[in-house]
Image: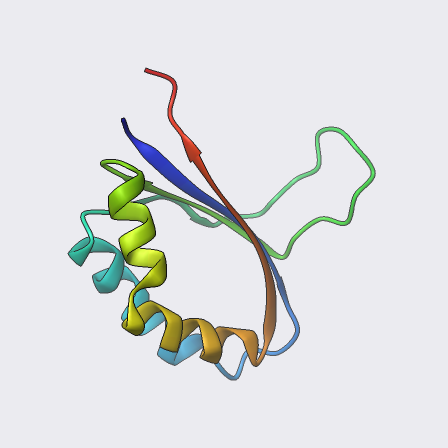
Length: 97
């Protein structure tokens, strides 16, 4: 069953972004993933929580591919870099099929 990683990011500094975004698309692709949403201009439609600076949705063939990507040494290394200038909330969920 198709699975998605959905994230909301608060950006504190941009020092990490060039390196991170130069590498992350290829890494996602190598794990059979595809960005469905990346960045954009989040707009609040309901609720009162703080809006993220950026949001993303990555589609994977299944949870196994998604967790393989997330737990990979290469992604975790990039995540350390990302954390130097941002805060991320991310979830893994299944598609409706």
